[in-house]
Image (cartoon, rainbow, N blue to C red; front, top):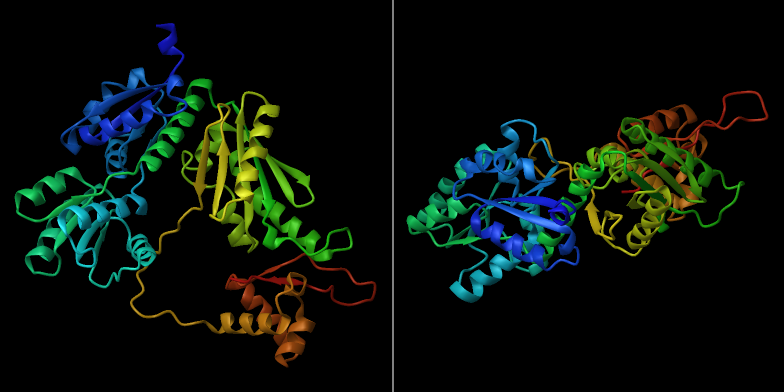
Length: 436
């Protein structure tokens, strides 16, 4: 009994076939000896709260088989243990389409797909080189949206617009099959399940050890954002570091953490697992990266380390940072105190409105691009002031100041601290143009 209690207990909740798949993959993980997977399968989504309630007292964390199951459980109230879910990903779609082509002769260019977003489907089809003009998508937004999935697929198939339906929801797949609609079900890939189990294990460990476990986050300017030369005389470098520090403070204060300079181009954030769990939405998104991109306009590498001591957490953070430096993906990397490694993607911001017309460049974007073309690719040249802008655009400095203020309001430039002049008059106000 003592041996069982020493293991991290993860409840796996969802349809029977997916629960069985996840438990089987979990048994083959390197960390399997330290985990205990508790299956709670159900034939109907509505039974999830009841099944979950029966195992809550015996588990440290919950892994739901998909976002639908997770959202349904949260609708009943706040979960008493940390929870995450297996994401619906493009990798699962690739495998599903391949099965459909090889086993059933389905044309992937004439299908309907639910759960995934239009952007995710377009990206997946672009990668496999198949036109997506005949592919219809119904995105999962909340549990209520699942009610529309069956009708969405059935109408398209009956009208002859599609040859098959692709769904992630078992009950939808069963009903479509009963109605004679050819249907494929997207299931998570082995790699996606492994990542999700690692995330659940981290959540369970944090829950058992308490929120006071130490977390170290190293934030380093990406290679492309670093100046060509360093030193105290490099004004642009100093202001860039100051702006990075300010951006980090904006998030760090909300976490109750501390931030301090680490090396020439990096900072260290010291916090707890509890605060980090909240900031990363339970280890599903990268911390700080979206804030730095929005406020400073540069890319950073982020490495996160967890540990029982500050030394262990710091060593793991250095390992994670090395992986971030060597990765082409926009993601942070995390290394736990047991060696578990996770990739945390950049937060995806949903569009508030659906654009019905092609987006046109604003006047501010055109002005920014004109300045960048004149300045060239040198990062040092991207710091300008009213005098430089006036000379490039052929306007008075007063007009140039209005242009720069407009660029700031549009998010195309950010103001640096004013530079005091040895002469009388207005201090020089520099700005850094944001490229991208």
